[in-house]
Length: 133
Image (cartoon, rainbow, N blue to C red; front, side, top):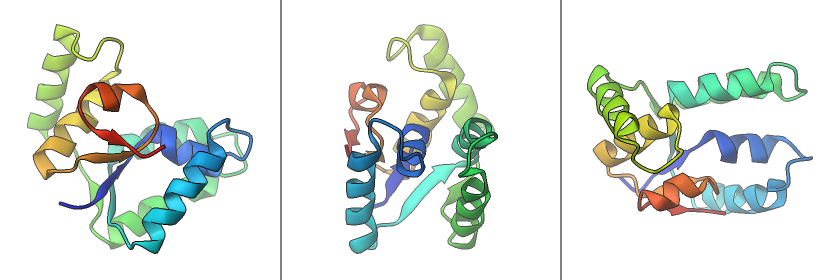
C-alpha cells in the first residue's frame, strides 16, 4: 500500500497550533493532501487522540476524522492477532520505551505494507519506518 499511517503525535501536532511541531506537521500534511495520498490509522490511535483532545478546542475534529476515515475505509480495526503480536513485542522490550499503541501501529503497518508514518515519533524511525516530519 502506498498510504501513510497517521500517528497520534502527528495528528495532534497538526491540530494544536501551540505544538512545537505544528508547522512541520502542517507542511507534511499539505504535501500528502496535494498528492492525494491515502491516509490510514487504527481505531486505537483515534482513542488516544480523543483522550488528548477531550478538553481542547479541536475536540470535534477527532470525530470528524473518524467519520471521514470510516467513509473512505481507511480506519483499521486492530485484529486480535495484531494486538497479541504487539503485546509480545512490548513484553520483550522491543523499541525501548515504545508504548503498546505504538507496537500495535507497527504490526498493522507491516501487515498492510505501509512504510511511512505521519509523525516525528522516533519509535517509528527505530522500527524502520519513514517519519514525515
